[in-house]
Image: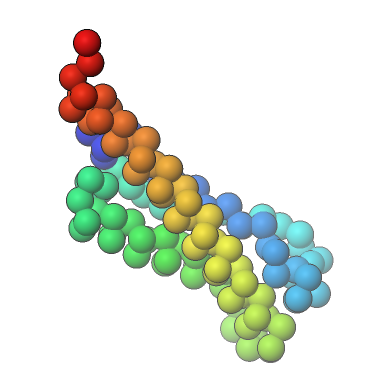
Length: 112
């Protein structure tokens, strides 16, 4: 089984932690979610992992886009949201990469 077939998507779920610093966002209380495709990537390669990280960054930027307002509170909230989204997405990506490598490790060990 290939690493590609083990993970079709990583979900980045960001609860708007910025609500504490941006009262306008606190009113919605919404969680924002997006999906990052991984099925077309070979996560066993540096190139595949680099592409995945780029996709996670784009997804974090999209999820944490609070509009065109540039108030200090909203800029700070968007920055905090992006940091949380990147942390969440990268942690999920690492779990997918590690779990995808497990069958290879088992095969390499040979077993008895």
